[in-house]
Amino acid sequence: DQTRIENLILVTRDRNGIATITINRPKSLNSLTRPMMVRLAHQINALGKDESVRVIILTGSGRAFCSGVDLTAAEEVFKGDVKDVETNTVAQMELCKKPIIGAINGFAVTAGFEIALACDILIAAKGAKFMDTHS
Image 1 (tube, one colour):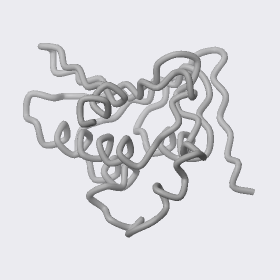
Image 2 (cartoon, one colour; image 1 turned 120 degrees about the vertical axis):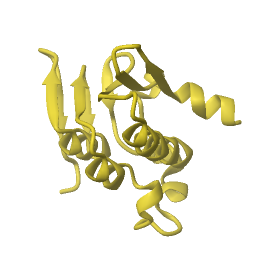
Image 3 (cartoon, helix red, strand yellow; image 1 turned 90 degrees about the vertical axis):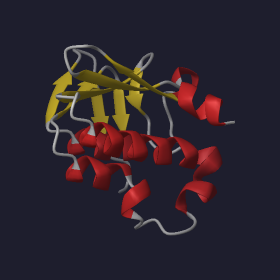
């Protein structure tokens, strides 16, 4: 199952020091499950500590950046210690010393909007849409 999670949060690096993290679940508009959120947080932490990485680009595949938490897995996402800094994507982004560029290619909704806001720089495609559904 670890390989499946790795395929849902893809990490690539080039020799110029650019690391790209792609949320890769386009059929669900890149909605996040708990294992995906944990991997995302861990990868940001690891890339932030990697001396060969100069910048991190965070994006989504398909027509969305991230539509938020997968509502079919919401119970799993919100149970346990939600304040655990090690597995909290936004907390890891805030702690990261490397610049994080959000490449927003479509919908950034609720948790996806929060992740976008945690980026240092946002570059939005013409059709990008930012929404917060908390209210």
